[in-house]
Figure (cartoon, rainbow, N blue to C red):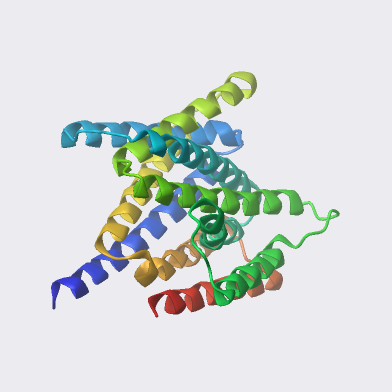
Length: 287
């Protein structure tokens, strides 16, 4: 097996592992019980912050951040934090599979974000795929102001938007020479700081079991973050990104076996549309 093929297979394995860890993170978020989303997000980020900090110190890597990179780094942290807060809220109030697929709208929002932030043009075909995927998202959201699930579903979709725009700013920061490890550390630190005011005002005490779930949530999130980073080091996103949608499989399985959740037909149609567009974009980008 040649080196390129080996790296491709490693990239796929790492990306599937990241999908597993992020799906597991959602399980621990739910198992942590009735705690405010910012409180859960704080523990998710503080664990990742310390792990990234320790790895950065051990690497003894010299950090130099160009002045032009600071704005996209800040925007990546801000939009990324919005993505996390909204995703956590959606996980607490929706089926795990619904929350997962709404969060996975982020690659489509990243295409739109890249046009405005990176000045990267997209084709009519890519634009059509984004539009159809958004229609698929509406099947999951099922917009109806009389439906109690509409608000958390809309917030889940907003989380996908935040994550997608964050990825665009992440790419922008990378092209300007920012250090990847520092970006992860900075993002985690900013997210923790943004959580603090909410925690001070609406802090809810937690017991030992909930604390354990919060720690496992943070460890799973860190595992997912480092696995996805390793994946894209070994292979280009256009070649392996579609495998990130295996998170939907893991989330559906966890939701069914742990929480007894079953998606309705409208959601399944939405999943099918979004995943179909992701697969189509995968082959289109490889071409």
